[in-house]
Length: 66
Image 1 (cartoon, rainbow, N blue to C red):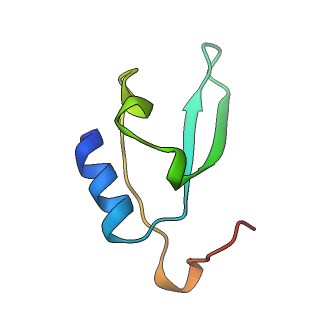
Image 2 (cartoon, one colour; image 1 turned 60 degrees about the vertical axis):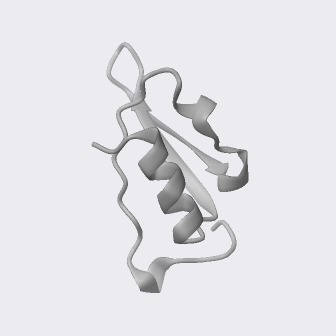
């Protein structure tokens, strides 16, 4: 598990464009939301999210959402 500081550094160093937040609701249903990386800051993680960073393989990286 990474800290918010580590994730923000990863976003900057690897020029991450979008983040996909995945979570389950109280009933256990999986949801996700993609956000532009420029909107993410330290406050994004203030709610105590469990952070796992899994970068896409080089061939799957893109500068635009699909």
